[in-house]
Image (cartoon, rainbow, N blue to C red; front, side):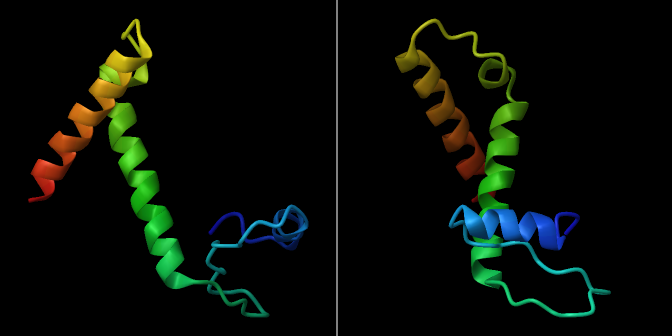
Length: 84
């Protein structure tokens, strides 16, 4: 919500971005945004946050791309199991 300024929104629209920033409560002119898309964005950001918490992924100790991808997949499986 901190990025709810007209300047940032105009720059994003100039670059053909879809605005998913919720407006502040005290904003004079209320702006519409897609709440479902915002929820998906939040979900993806949190998943990336959890991946980065894992030391092997955050520092990329894997020597090959294949082993790094395997580490990401293992961490995603561990996150998925925690959800269940």
